[in-house]
Length: 471
Image 1 (cartoon, helix red, strand yellow):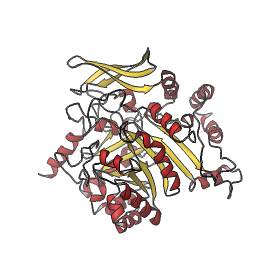
Image 2 (cartoon, helix red, strand yellow; image 1 turned 45 degrees about the vertical axis):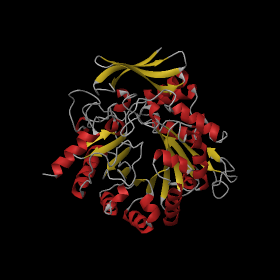
Image 3 (spheres, helix red, strand yellow; image 1 turned 30 degrees about the vertical axis):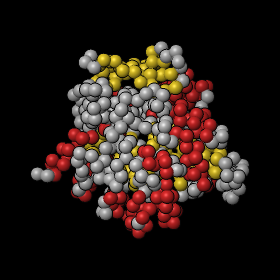
């Protein structure tokens, strides 16, 4: 059954090829593509045809299309070969990543950035400032998106607090630090400097609750390091998002344990953001379909491993209604009840409700009023939640206020790789990386890696930067 026609890339030569998304008799959805030089490829992208179609219906919502003066590059070969952003891109940033180094204090077998490999770099402060100016010029016409400072391992840089302060001064209000936690666990004063400079959220690599998981995915026993990093954040009042890279054989069975770990550490831990393994960077291998983790796999595992405390139908796509590709992500927000259970605030709309949402979204006059009704319908507090017993009286504003302390976000984003890249998805990507040379590139596209380790953008961008700085 043909579900959709699109374009993709050949996993061998990285040339653009026609592709189809098809449903087959095993009730799975596959991306099928053929390169005239290297043959045909088929990879699993979703489990459950009906579920895929239901989530696909959310793609009828109009994206926040880029205007002509917001494009940086022209169109020569077409998406995803002209980044960027080029006029074919349809979505402004909801999230900006800036990699300030590729040095790292670990050598993780699953690193999508291949940190510490072949070459190293630290982006100069002056160049970081120029990159942030590019974001402000092209991505911030109506609002300034959150920015994540990443690597490599950004805390290797002693001047990271200076980078944070510069971003804050330039107008970035939400500044996250993407870290493995080693430095901030061992050096609380360094963490304090980050907070005082303007960092307000730690995006903490957190793959599981036992050392065997870290030994397999990171090459080191890190459980106590992770706990100490969270304790230091709690002491200094910094929020934490736990970020597990999930593989079928290393930690898929610990999804529920990770959620329970997070729940016990509310309000310091504000969320868990699962990232099913992407076959890129140091891990460009051709995936077996049994090893591929899809969105439905994650939602089913969350429901089963939490004993139904959080159910699969409690999740919706991230940025629902803002033109992002609906199959890219999932999210849920829950309130912590007095009895220690999570009370989900979100539900996936029924088919009838979906049609109503889509039709109302097409009318600019109806949308603002309808949006408020949707929020009230889908974000209802339970009478026995922790916030209601203290001061919630039924006012929506008070609900938002109490959510600042007693909530947990559970979300996920399976990044695309060379095997399953769908150009239609890439054009709607809202997670953007700002790169040296003042280009902005969708994050999945930036990390695409061929089967023999050649990258579509990453190595070319950073090697050009290294060569330019060495002159």
